[in-house]
Image (cartoon, rainbow, N blue to C red; front, side, top):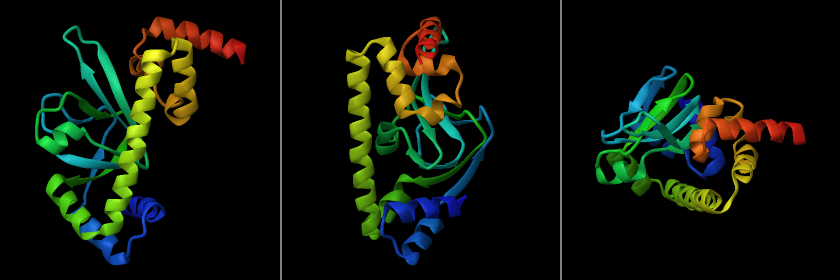
Length: 193
């Protein structure tokens, strides 16, 4: 698992072999089976997560049992519940594996230590935070100003790899529309292409 992360991080940041070794020393490798939960809604999210293989999702479950997917995290991506991780508060989300997944985890204390002692890592995280903020603002803008058709097109454009890997009801949940509505739009989208 760590070799995949090492390849990724060397592309993202200028780190020495000692820096990589320090990151490895603090890393926890974890494998999740499909449908296995890493964080339950209401538990504290104790890790910053890097996905080396597989696909995670974060979602909430309402009292009626309906799910609302907030985020997908495929391989070569970082993930956590930022509020829960930073403040040690109960998470609003369940984080589980949609596929067999291989993860590398760091605790908050270990991550702080790494960022304090590896300047290139701090610069890398600053860039990641900026990009994540941009993606979030774009998603909010799309959610409040786009038609369902436009939301679906945006999802396919920006998440083609995920679109091919998840069932339609999960895409609908992520977009905040019913499965029936998305099925209708998907049929017309395919016919129009």
